[in-house]
Amino acid sequence: MILVVAEQHDGMVNRSSWEVVAVAQQIARSKSDPIKVAVVGVDVEAAATELTKADVAEVLVVENDQLAVYTPDGFVEALTALVQAESPQLVLFSHTYQTRDFAPKLATRLGRALVTDCISSKMTPDGLVLVRPMFQGKFVADVSLRGAAPHFASFQIGAVRADAAALGKSAAPTRRIEVAIDGMAIRQKPEAPFKEAKQAVDLTQAERILAVGRGIKGQEHLSMVQELARALDAEIAASRPICDAGWLPMDRQVGSSGQTVAPRLYLALGISGAIQHLVGMKGSRTIVAVNRDVDAPIFEVADYGIVGDLFEIVPALIAALGE
Amino acid sequence: MKIAVCIKQVLTRNWPLRVDESAAWVRDRDASFEMNEPDAYALEEALRLKEQHGGEVVVCSAGPARVTQVLREALARGADRSLHVESDELAVADARGVADALATALRPEAADLVLTGLQSDDQGFGQTGVILAELLGIPSSTIIMDVEVHKSGVHVKRELEGGWFQWVSMSIPALLTIQSGIHQLRYATLKGIMAAKKKEIRKVRPGVVPDAGYAIVQLYVPEKSKAVQFIKGSSGDAAKALVRALREDARVL
Ligand SMILES: Cc1cc2nc3c(=O)[nH]c(=O)nc-3n(C[C@H](O)[C@H](O)[C@H](O)COP(=O)(O)OP(=O)(O)OC[C@H]3O[C@@H](n4cnc5c(N)ncnc54)[C@H](O)[C@@H]3O)c2cc1C
Ligand SMILES: Nc1ncnc2c1ncn2[C@@H]1O[C@H](COP(=O)(O)O)[C@@H](O)[C@H]1O
Figure (cartoon, rainbow over the protein chains, first blue to last red):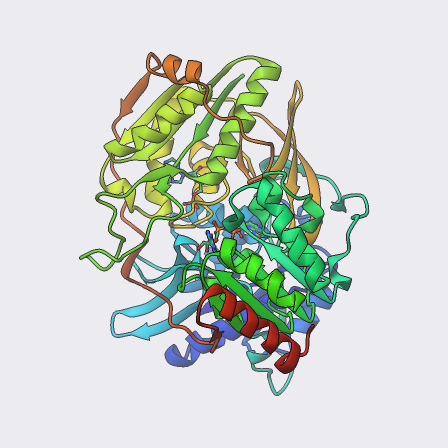
């Protein structure tokens, strides 16, 4: 049996949990395994009902008052009990911030390993092989599972399409599972999530964005980028390290921990294209990448690419735009 | 307050990566190495907490002899002493194996706070810190952007997805995985570098490395899927051709 641990917020299923249902269906097909989907929390009926539409054997609702707000300790307690009761062969998650927060602890508590951030899977004569990026996406690795089941794996957000998940002919049955949780075992006291005070720049409205990454080398070179932005009539954005270094304000950051943008033109200068950056901009209509490394992952999402030194290309672009 | 920081040594960012003979790792024999970036931020947080609250900063790294380079660097930036879990195997071990080694070194230290980076630039497991917390039997919180220490524990700001944050309280001892950008980094001064020469790098035996839960069978450059149109030629010609394409074909200018 394959167990998918779905993530929900305020009764809404994360889109990426549907992606993991699709992954589970792919793996199950080659092994003809049943799939169960677990939702953990209090008042998660709406999420559970949504998930019963999937072509799966069962939806498990894991309940306890201690799970009303997410804590890693609460989730580990609940899911340890669930995994022990249901004995899955494989437990799958979406590689979200929440999964990063609790799943390694869960696997360790059960004496198992977790393979994180997988992008695909394949069946081989030696069993299931998971594919995951390494070296910030410049390489991928085929990873084989060792030791006894259950095995644990998380899949990168966007690794497969959510709409690839097959829907069932009729709603899957739901089963409620009341788990016992010792309140003392929960050591984190979380407060309500919040957003920082309103951001000064709203990149989501920009028609054109010129984004700069670590290839720019120093803050002093930003004036050249600003000049190009004026010539393009574009807003300036950046990858995380540029904002971390304080070269540009945080509200210009694009990516999983910054803004998600979809302008008509996104021009990336000296950005490698780590997944956390790509999720924030890959919906852009036309993507241009300038990078001196032909293997940089940014070229995977680009429509036009120039392989070269941005310190030569930027002045040349400014000149060409002036013509 | 005693603060332990786990620091991984990784290949320098611009090192040209090539798969080695084993086909399961990259050639790194004559490579240059540096401190994993988020770990530099974890160290910075630890040094600032020490400045505010007093105490000691102990840094720990697991890996071959070469990892003493990043320990020296941390000592030069202001850490008080260091632990080196020495083992060649740990250079490519799975997250559980590394966490076990780190736990062996850190258990006797009984630090009030253990800080790790949120993710390594090479393996990118994003889980060694959380496993370590479980092995040490202490609570954890991840992707931290701010740390306040109170009498009874810590109050930390977790980064959530899409620009959301959340404050979480925990008693200490506790483990935090630190996100890049939490503060501006300090660099080693000449005085710091001189002082580091006298600071301790204590060797720790790794203990029994547990059986790996998974293993890399092959490492390779990902297949290119989407057809990007590369614009060739001199910088001037490429720039002109790109501007033309953006004006006339894509019509975005
Ligand atoms: C939980 C988490 C959340 C994150 N959130 C975000 C986020 O929201 N946004 C984000 O951007 N990142 C985020 N990151 C970081 C992300 O993983 C990458 O580290 C980051 O995006 C890399 O930035 P970069 O491409 O600018 O730098 P690098 O990866 O260092 O790339 C620099 C690029 O510049 C090229 N280059 C160098 N010199 C030149 C030159 N002269 N001419 C042309 N090209 C040159 C190089 O070939 C290289 O490809 C997050 C990471 C984690 C773990
Ligand atoms: N070999 C190591 N030595 C010391 N710390 C490590 C080692 N490997 C991982 N870490 C720590 O664990 C964090 C997460 O690494 P990872 O789980 O590999 O993504 C890193 O940022 C380090 O703080």
